[in-house]
Length: 248
Image (cartoon, rainbow, N blue to C red; front, side, top):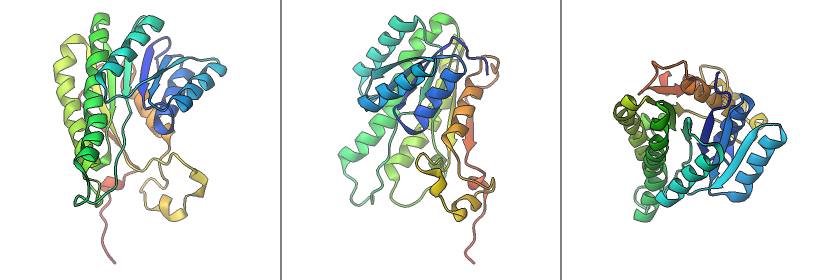
């Protein structure tokens, strides 16, 4: 994918999917800005990229805070002079009965996942439009379409991100900014080799997903040649959301 010398911001980049996405862009020649509120791991991730010969900086950032995101963009411009790509990956969920979920817990999830995605996109777009183009990818989830019990705040936030994606695509299109989202299914960010055969075989693709699967999708959606791709959702779940399940 042709992202060489482009400036890419990845939020939630200290670990998991975000860390792998940041590393992948660096391997393809991009200049990467890693943002996360987990400072030690975020700084280590940026150092790992630099030690491998890539270009990267780490900026501490809580995406639920408008001031932090404005600071993130300023640091990016000061270091690399432009913003070409934003990967809105930061987010979390709370697995808790709706009878017990507190208002603060609900707000924490929505403020990080939805408000953070919107504010990051807005702040990045202010700089992207000066270039006449840009690409934003929002990390959504198959939980925007289907659910397990007791995950209401997370599901609501991901449904909102899905809608926000197509809305931003329409609003920012005249400035040459494309906005898409990825909805992962089960992406294992821990010890992949400890998964059971049953975990893999329940997926029509025959395996559980890996962070690298999402990184490749981000590269595809943000490739500057893919100018006809905007406002879309790319579901990456090994076919699970298409599988009909019956009790035997």
